Amino acid sequence: MQAMQPLSGSEKRALKSRAQRLEASLKLGRQGMSPAFCQQLNQALEHQQLVKVRFVEFKDQKKTMAKELAEKTACHLVTMVGHVAVFYRPENESSASNQSAVDAGDPASASTQS
Image (cartoon, rainbow, N blue to C red; front, side, top):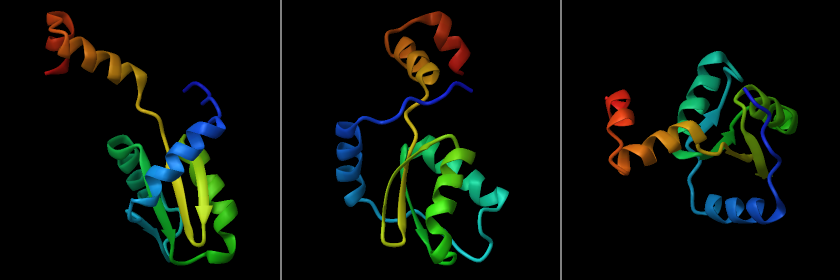
């Protein structure tokens, strides 16, 4: 997996603005950063790109845990406000290019999408 480019200031501002309207879709509770929780976060990032996580437990460790979650799931930690962290993963470029080829009517890529 290639290294992610850091977010620019304007990108972070735009993501923070979008995140204000979101509800926390995941809650980090007693189980902590279990493999199942990391998998749920990965799935949420694949579908939504921008995900809020509420720290129900581990509130005193939230800053270090949020950074670890970002590393484990290969995403950006956009911001932390209170007990909520916002994570962002850009859309996978290869899947985006495959989708645009299908939209353009490319029969070679359309057969691989089925």
